[in-house]
View 1 (cartoon, rainbow, N blue to C red):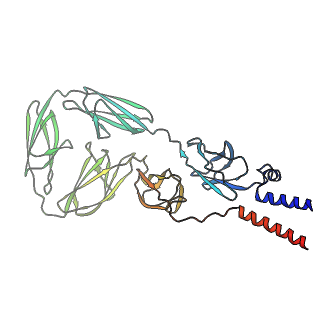
View 2: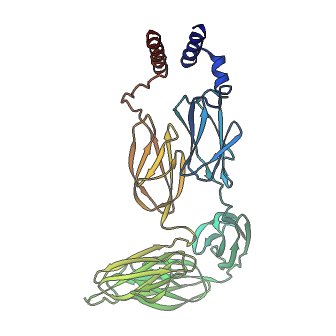
View 3: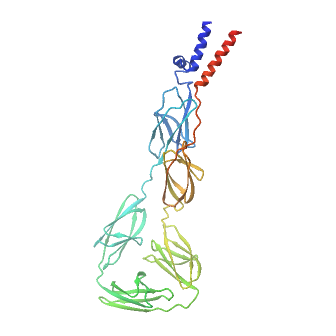
Length: 445
């Protein structure tokens, strides 16, 4: 009888957890066979190795890896995640608590790709004398001495222009991570003269050697002596064009009588490209090339809609449709984008307070905050941030091609009360009482 009571008391003692020594001996020192929970490590990159307290445990797949642990074992306090080619290496974080039986503790790690090597170089331009205006592929960048930074690797043209000196032009090749020196020895123009230009009617646009100078009447000084091409344009009138000879130390006067264009069904298109030297197509046919100042004019075009295409090697084509009214100049400004810059995707940086929110773009999980996504297609997207214990945050975000777009969100706590977890002690106590009742019934029999 005493033996039976002793056995029964030991069983009750183990179930209620008040006999730690006997319990430890039965379940293997409080580890093997102990209460099992899980630590789930979430990561925005698959194939990352996960360690707990420095001991490798698993590799992430599907954005996470789940590690079974025993609440009765040695507690884990730190986790680390690492993947080759990503930073930080490794990502480390603390484990807030060990899970009890059946519980899951979630921790989060965000890995970012190691930045690619630089794709830019720079150009250091000096001239003699200094103070010359510097043009890179026809675009003004400043005066000498000048350092032009963040230039994509490739071939370019440099021009240095200073009043009273001949324009100096030279090709230059830029290499990533390097600075290219360019020296521009300027040659002084020994003979100069002036041009005085008038038009009838007045206010005509003046172009000297294809470069825009202003509107008539206008005095142009410091012009190199010799022959030059001068052109005057005014809406509603035929273009006036002539070759003039500028005398040394003198002034040549130009009087341009413009002829009105009879009412017709034609107009003009002025194309300005950046950079200059681009080929212009009108309705699929080559019309010409933009001059050094980036301007090209297409004359006598029938009124109506036309397709204009501007191309230059190393740049993405610029295409547009314009409507040309009768007797009217229509302007097309084509800013060409380097073909090395993606034109269909943008970068989206997302952060949240608190961090660790799951990021869904157009209902697709893309990682957890904070995160930088570099391949988001240009256009409008539905962005959802979700974190346990907080209300979902939804926003419609416009992503611009080739640009950085940012979303920073403060999540609001979820005020809905959570159901209370049932404790394990009442269940164990009920089992013990049932066992005692069964023993008493057998004794009465």
